[in-house]
Image (cartoon, rainbow over all chains, first blue to last red; front, top):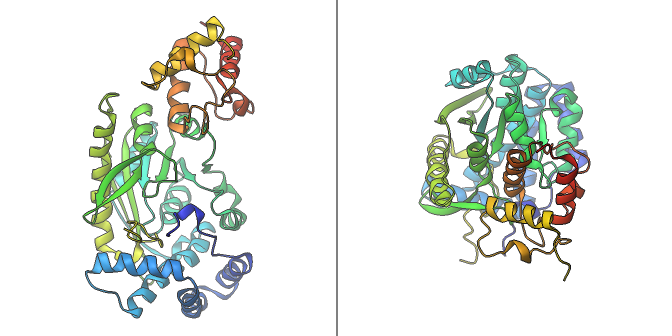
Length: 299
Length: 89
């Protein structure tokens, strides 16, 4: 039986994270990147569940049974973005070549003083967004994050940049969305990763790569209740030091009629799913949902 | 079963109406039962909708950083008491 993502044990341990930080900050990115190969290999050999998740996804996205080389590339892409988070969080943006598409959407939104929902995913690096938005442009960005799921990682990232830690809104308790709504009201751009629903969460069924996926309903309901625009973002890692960040306007406002809420939600979330699929096809190795995403096991 | 006070019944009606709990009668809500997760099984979306409805009806805002939230959202009785104490209309 496959486990949902929240129950998967945290792979990263304190030593590995300390190692990544030490290497990244004191030995430099080239050394760090060279060491990613043995690290990737280690995880490839030991993380069976994640490997099966990767194989299933790649089969779907590439249209053939993936080779070991392709699975390795998938893991390596993930590891590379984790290493780069250290540089993003410590403000070393000059190391990277950042290509930004649709940046006017967030800039205009921030200048207008009206908050919005930034709808992202576990495709690529959302840290790229935070780095650009907060470091370079000083935009009022908040990120809704499941900090309880990965406490070690959270502590590790917070230690790197305590100021950035303040822009995290932790998920938990009934007042979570109230907090998000208040932030939007104050003019913040609130980032939500909308491609994973926690068990028990209200969901809306869409199609991704031709098969049903239950997406969380909350981000879209929230945009409807807060009466604010929705902007999509995708931070793709293209290899080397290249990142490509895309922003797209999904909706000026979301109107959800109470009686037909589920249908309306379905229509809006399907648009999100379509864009997610589009960018996933552009950069399949950026798909960082290393588990049985489509619940194929046992079906 | 514990009976609802008139004001608790009013809040229960608001709850049922706001969240479209079609299969629940306001007078059937147990006043001490948890509203969220177990009990009525409400979630974070419901909490937000409820907070917005309370602000419209009673003219005060429930704040997310309120230390008392856990208690306020604990049951219909606790919520009703909180509203009674803070309402401005």
